[in-house]
Length: 286
Image (cartoon, rainbow, N blue to C red; front, side, top):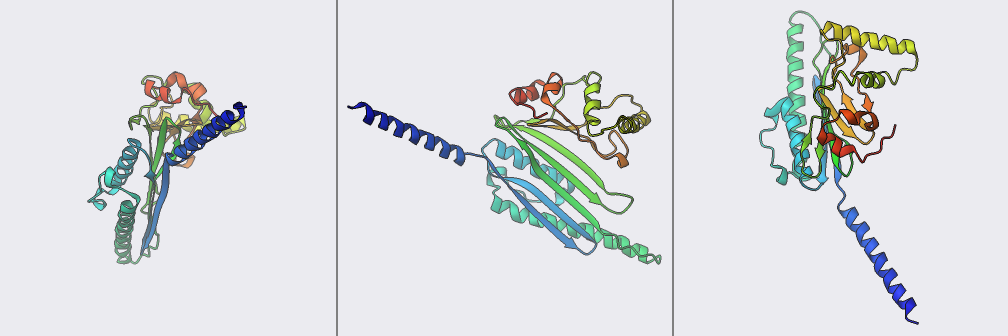
C-alpha cells in the first residue's frame, strides 16, 4: 500500500531535478549580442560591428573582449584612447565607445576624401568617389570546448579596388587561451593533396578545376614557390578547419580570397596537439 506514494515522491523529486537542471543550464548559457553602428559623412562612410559577450563566463569573456579591442586598435588605436578593462566593460559601457569610434573613422576618412577631391579640383578635375571603412569582429563558431572569432577590416580609398584583411582566433574555454597554431610545423608538403581537394571542391568540371589550379600555380611560381602554403589565418568550427587566405596570398585579386574547409576526419593528422584535443570528439558534417 505504500509503494505508490513512494513512487510518486520519487517521480516528483526526479522531475524537480530535471527542471532545476534545465533552468540552470539555460541561465548559464553564453550569450553574445551584435552591436553595430554606421555613420555617413561627406565623402565617406564607416561601419563597425562586433559580437559582444553580454553574458559569457570567464575566462572566455575577457579573452573575447581583449580580442575585440586589439582588432580595433590595430587599425586606428588613437580613436580608442580610454577603453575599459574587460571586467568593467559591459554592453552599456561599450556602446558609446563603439559609436564614437565609428564616428571618428567616418570623420577621418571623409576629411581625407574631401582633401583629395579639393586637390584634384585645383587641377580642373572632378572627384566624387565615396570612400568607406568596414570593421567587423564576429563570433564564427562555438562548441562546449571553444569559441572561434573572425575579424574583417576592409576599406576603399580610391583606386581599382579596396583593401581588406581577415583574421581569426580560436579560444579554448577551459582557460581562455588563444589557439592560433592550428597546423603542425612542417606539414605543408604532406598536406598538398588535401589543400587542392578542398580548394577545388566547388568547381564541377575538370576544365574549371584545371583553370583555377593553373591560376594559383602561375601566381605561386611568380612568388618563387611550387607548393600551396598553409594560410596565416585559420580557425576551428564544427564542420572542420576553416582556412582563411588573404587576397593576393596564393592567387591574384581577380581570383578572390579562397576559404576552404577541411573536415576533421582528414585534417586531424596535421593538427597541433592543442587543436586536436579540442576537436577529437567533434563529428564532421561532410
